[in-house]
Image (tube, rainbow over all chains, first blue to last red; front, side):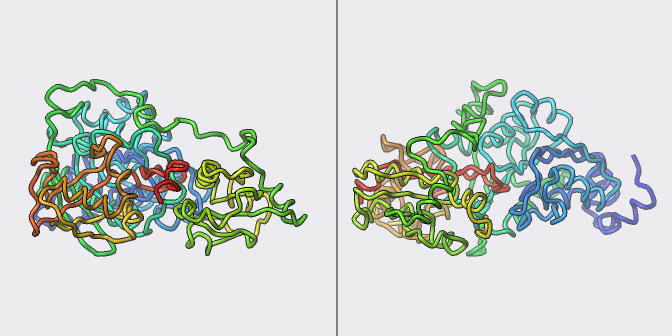
Length: 382
Length: 112
């Protein structure tokens, strides 16, 4: 393998760094990296790994670009909304560096396909956003002996490390189990500073390149914590757990398992067009009640910062966390309708009220998002 | 006595404080003191049987207490404890999943 004249010019700022040089650049060109996810973490990873001259980059994603992605997923542009992320990402990466071979795996990574997809790559970068896929990527990497460059983010905080590098600790050594069944996806708690995945994704990109070049001190056996608000980096020791079920002394997991079951996450989210239950009310019926001037109480259990984004003016704001201690403000015999963003938190609030003896409590199905879709399109969605 | 660093996802249970200093001679005592001061935090980090949840790690300075003396690990005034929960986020798209447990119906009303 050699570099063409054009490639030598393109990579000249690498070639004149002694630690990289021609030898290092050829290692990058020979490298095959799999990037799982082209979202927040995957966006900077894809752009920089392409620019840096990795020979083959595999992408795994089956999602479609939407407007809420654009605040942080810088590989996708406004014009790409509605397109498959994998197409959008591959196009930008190819535009940055036509020398890179992009392999598109437009599938949901699963126990059935993970080994087959991962086996052709030297190294895997985990840019996913959910527990089942993280455990799946970890286990497949351990079983195949591939390093797993890990990063995750929440609001203003991030974590990064390299798992399963030359027999080093894996994700299960750090967290043996995911959150147990019964824990729910929360519409209350999401959100991330748009820049944060840039910082964490580029730490992953840096580690990827270091591992390929074989230079420096890899982020192995160390969990890097980043706090953007305090602007602190901290490092915790990450040890291999001898009792780890997959990489320990006596492994009990020897092939991929059912990760949705393991994580207690239903594989298929409930369909939106599911039937209305007795505890639910359609947004259109709530609108009719308001228009008729019915005597009822509409409660919004979102957070105050969400109420500021959009609201139904007739609604009384009682954030979910305060519902229990503000029951005294409500009449147990009143006709009560509760809403949140999409219906998850309001269902919880309905449960709290019913347990407290409230008789006529219903959940506004689909929340304010459904209200925006079906009652008042001027209400912004978020 | 030790300082405990509270990560973002748990700050809603500590009146938004990012660090809390409590008394206790061991890690176990410090965590008990912490969850006594902030009862809502108890369910987040302990199981009903009082065991630390397997997706929340506790570090004494930079070392995982699982590899020290677990709950019995001595905690000095100068020590910093960190609670480090498992976070899954990477894109926070529609498929984002959070580990935070919402209050079970009725439970919050009974405890407050």
